[in-house]
Length: 315
Image 1: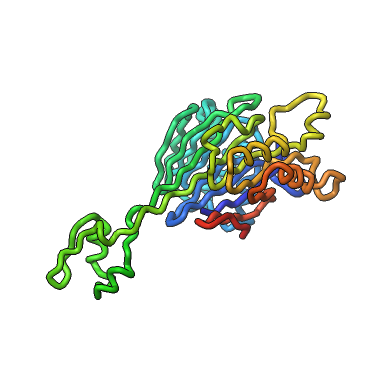
Image 2: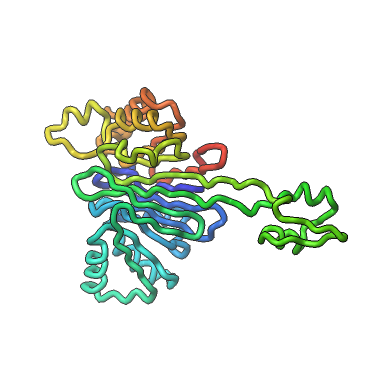
């Protein structure tokens, strides 16, 4: 799995960070998926390896502008780039009215099929290489996380064992993978004797804005990767005149440690944390690490991460 961060700022863009957007590519898939689409996401794509032509599906976590105001521009540019493959957008109730109004008022003729699916908490969806479940979060409006389970690989054949019998790669391999017995030099080869055990699919959660990470409960337990907002340090949050429903670095670290999260990527960083300010991004990293012993990254725009079977690495 490959994750490309296109926007990592909270609320508004800065000179260093654009607003929320994240691209996900899944192994052995020729398309990619976008999670949130803040203003100017299409501009960010121009500086990444991702292309609108291969974008298949967009998921919106919630209807705050920094997470979906980029949609009208992106769906219009798709047509201008002569990308006429269908596009599906999943979002909370209200996303349909927003998009239909934008298309109608601008008298836009997209030229391709645009499917809009409004989901609710608990809904489950199946895609080519993974399944996805919508989970509720705690925010000032309805906000959601996406729990993603990669499909198990169950058709891996023991080529070494077959070669030892003199069976070279051929149509016979395909028959065994499909669960059919095959004949070789007068012997019956049964599929169960030559199939390797299942490779379990990885589990990740991509969360929208949320003030209580532990609301994800058992879905967090031992997962391979959590992508979660981290808008404030605890000190900054405690000194806010008006409390905003976002996660602090301390709370995120505590919950990730409690739930044995294997890898953690924090994003949605408040603009006050920047290179030219006294409050550097290291403050967030250090506060999380005080409470979380797993592998941690603070995402920057255009960071690319690879989730392999043996761990998470920055590309």
